[in-house]
Image (tube, rainbow, N blue to C red; front, side):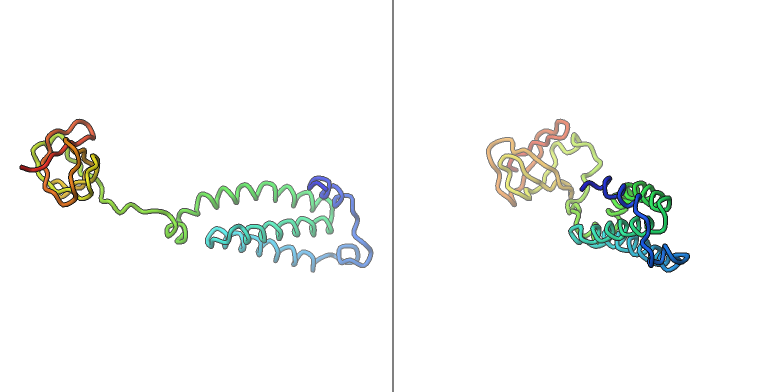
Length: 182
């Protein structure tokens, strides 16, 4: 049974005699609807803040669908309005969740942060003739510390072991060539 068929069937259904919607004003049903809407919003907010693998999101969606079904028990017009509001609110809520999730503490904890300090703003051409030390083995590319800053460097000849002193022989654009300090 498709979702459209299910809501069409609900729209055609009349409340049974003996139900609150058929006998009274349905105020108890309205309270349940308000409580389920609040629960759905709360559970969805928890889904954004707490990684649950989608379980809280599914519970939130289930509460929203139950709200629409209860609105159909009040009247067909209330059910259709609730269905329309749900169809508009779900994409908006998803968009807001994706927009604000990176700001949550869990997202900050799960995402990678750079441990490497920012590159120096000085021009690489100013480094020609400077001396430094190899931080990682140059095979032939690796990291060197020159003038207190870390740079990705290319060994001019062969490989250079970590801890070795080097000198910069050329700097063309982003490529810095180094060789053993003699």
